[in-house]
Length: 299
Image 1 (tube, rainbow, N blue to C red):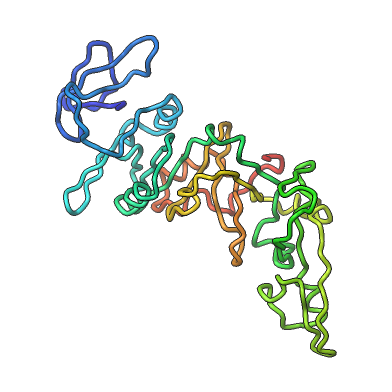
Image 2 (tube, helix red, strand yellow):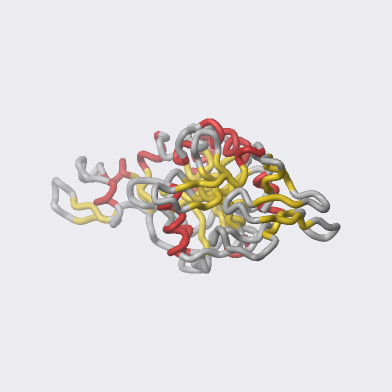
């Protein structure tokens, strides 16, 4: 733990320090040394919060982005159950900073307990398995309204990546499909087949490569990308609360669904914007809205 009660004040560990656990009231001793992260430990081992994990420097760095009063805040449920949130902002948003792996059961328990929760996950352990591909146009842009993303894959290489524009990424155009059937929907056109209203014949729609619209994507870019995660930690893909992956640097990677047809994607989010919004917004889902502009060269 980073903080303990000393003379009723929450303070960080110091050499020779003794204090009390803010959650259970047990005696704490400071663990300080040249080769360890300074922290507090229970004088007698006591699992007062089974969700707690040993801190890493990455974990501590994240806590230090927020004021002292926001760190390690005890959260009490209606039935009296108590857990310490890594971060709880003045507006009630809880941020859990997760380094180690997690089971579905524990993730679900935390999401149900905190409710207004957002996850920040250390991505350093799986970065080599996480490929971020080409940018996507902003979902509400004019060009995006005409694109129907195909699930067809490259025949040469399932996950090829050539100059950040993999040749396995294809799309149909709704406007071309409607030349044969003016009333066809995106969902109906995803098959790549259109039945002409005039002749009744079934025709294929032209399949386009992402390379054809690179400049238009660049002009409407707002952080969205296709990605592939080999050997994923699936619990984060199933999370009901927002999940941000920290691969280091100034930007986080947030899991999102691109359109109404469940195309999985990620969106880059400024770490500075994330911290700012967490302190002033009232709900986790309102952090870093898609309307927030990004530099064109973030990727």
